[in-house]
Length: 115
Length: 116
Image (cartoon, rainbow over all chains, first blue to last red; front, side):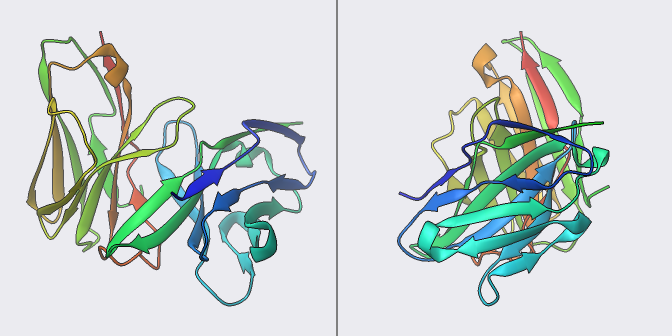
């Protein structure tokens, strides 16, 4: 069964510092990969996705993610974090299984930004 | 405003109550989903509707009863819930199903449900 691991439950970074959130998946084939962000009291908003092609994908709000097949990873990065980036971030893996979508979300990483 | 609207935002109900959650989207999407988000657990898919027809029911207890009268509206009827059902219930939509949507899923802001 496919699984998604976000090993960091909580991360604190200083405003202006760089950020990397980790995501590893477990599946034999290359799935479709997503990163979502959830601000307090809100639903999930799509940041970026990887389907195929260039392994470095750009998203909204200055985020990017790199797909590394050899490491089964899809880590999210931002060069300089802003206070408004404080939120919870979810990695998701999707694949077609038996003709149906199978989407699995990670447990999330909560980002705290300090001055 | 994401395009998917959920009401109410907060709901407190007793275990013997009956209540309903509502979700509405006018994005022209054909598929709608109910997810349950509990603390420290991954999002759990509950139900999928495609063109108003229920396509998936992920072993959800019968005290949760979905209804999809048209492609724009989705309800979750609740009755005789348990305290462990307290969670954030998220509605989502996508253009297509079962094809994985190229533009991801559009989520509502959720209903924070507390069962007392």
